[in-house]
Image (cartoon, rainbow, N blue to C red; front, side, top):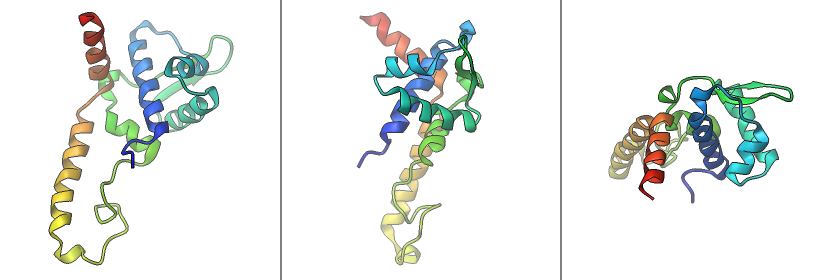
Length: 143
């Protein structure tokens, strides 16, 4: 089982691409974002619609239209994008927001999973688009 769904991966990559171009003020078309991400235009549009509805991206229609981030890259975390696109990450159904479990009252496993869940959420919440763009730029310069 993948922790991040395919659409979430595409959405994160589109958001990183938008973050790279945030300071130049240019809008990027859904077609260009999809081509650069190597996925279909139709899928890219669906993901961008979700991101727009959640207020993470702005869009403008027309020949000069396209998408840009709604907030600074430093203000958008990876966990925020994941939550919008797939409802977050939950390790097990017994954890908060899950369906519950008959062993919930006396379960050693749940305690450890809950700690791991908090760690993952905290870790992903601490990664911003700005950080992802910076780390990507550093990799490119080493080559």
